[in-house]
Length: 124
Length: 278
Image (cartoon, rainbow over all chains, first blue to last red; front, side):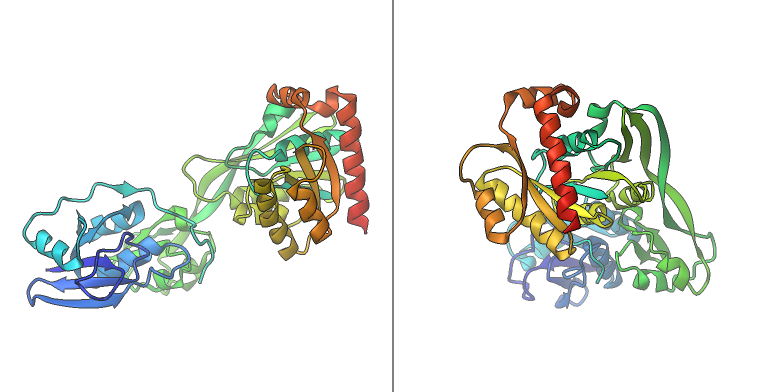
């Protein structure tokens, strides 16, 4: 199973990003191989629709679970369609959160915000 | 002549100035472009009002024709389309109705359908033709409603456009066809900063502009200093006057009831016309 976590840095020892759509990186953890990989979040510099773009990238990376502090409703709709489970991040590193998630210690995310639409409002 | 009335924040007096300016003209069209919270109707109480829906086009997938090639998701600059498990998801409120996805779909699997997002109202109030746009609750962009409103504006005569607050897309759309931009400001440091944001916008749009100070007090203030520094004509000063505040709070139009303000707004209209001709 692959777990995707939004992150400000590429290292799993660093904290989880406060944003999902605008996080600079995604850290992808493969539970089968126990390996971390980092990918650039294409939503980070999107002028509009960052959440959708980021969620699409997470789904395309093969995520089955996403750990985040918050998430917009469009991204959630995409995750639901893709059958991806959202978990609520806790303070600590990306690696800590992944450890808690695989141990079944993270709660399912309920804090869905209505999106920060038209934050940029200019196409790329 | 089309006069757009704008300000950097809400509550500065855009509607007060717009409504009274329209009434100061012999005949005028008043257009309320503050589509998220239109309030011009509270003053004009227009009669014989007609309503017409405003619609936008959004993409729709024809059942069974999509192959999940993702071309549409790549074309969409706004990320209003996504593809999961070979199914296209459409996020309608992100869509800007550009039609690109329909045009580029190699399978012709996309079509467009109309979605209602707001209303245009037209009516009459004495010598003023009243126009107002309303964006439906929950919609994210008022721009299409403002575009629909702009199509209703006559080419000739005095048109007063009551803009939304701030300097975002809806304001840009509201001033697009304006011949003159009237910037309403409060005489404080905060008022000056708000004025600065709209001033930068109208300069970028290469519009002629002038300032009205609302709730003005005697003597020097940051807005006067700002106008002098940037050589922006100061066209009128509306005094800090509780009688005017009370009239306005009761939804009454000062120009229709009070000689002092009839004179003030007629002078303002004349000053705008003379500045616009320069």
